[in-house]
Length: 154
Image (cartoon, rainbow, N blue to C red):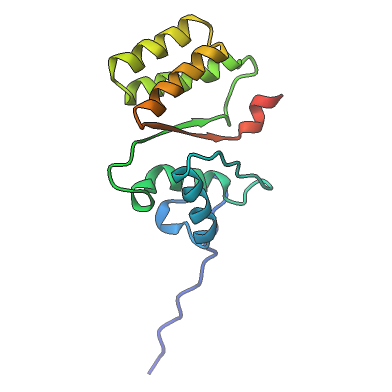
């Protein structure tokens, strides 16, 4: 009688593209920290060497937040991927992308007016602040998930 060959064990880590949520393993503590900070309205930076799973974590957070945060929570997750930005990308380009995405989610007339005013005013800090203050007053939170943020710094 011959034995069936053993199935090979494959390396669970992916190189290149973010892993699907079903293969995102071993990060429960980091996820608790990230979702706890989102729940408390705090900022978080996920930093580390290339190819250790930062992009995968951002994708996981965006897709799976309803499993971690209260049902009916007032969050809008806005993802910006800076991997392929052109060299001429400006802060106005960044805020334009953020506000385009926010305008799709936050549809009340006052939010739309504030977003339009920020865009017309060249995204100055006082107009941007008014957008986010309006959202906060209406218990809505924009959660920005910015992958490769350091590209914007140079």
